[in-house]
Image 1 (cartoon, rainbow, N blue to C red):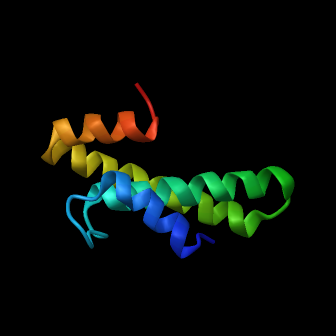
Image 2: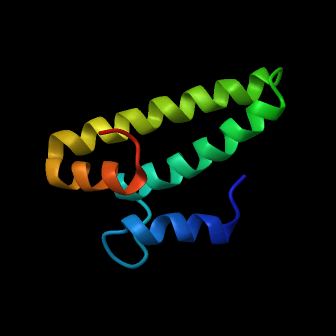
Length: 88
């Protein structure tokens, strides 16, 4: 579970404007932070299959947002990928 401070820190880097929480960039940033946190949880609790299912759902959701963003604005996609260090 992300605290409010962690969420705002993740959003500050990728927001289009103040108060932006719905843009694909913001959604990917939040999902990436949650994925990192949950994957570290699963390293300690490898039998937690309910959380593993949630993690897979979040990864798929992030992939959908990234695919949408790549189709709409490839420059923003490249910038987001670099800033989050996802690939490339």
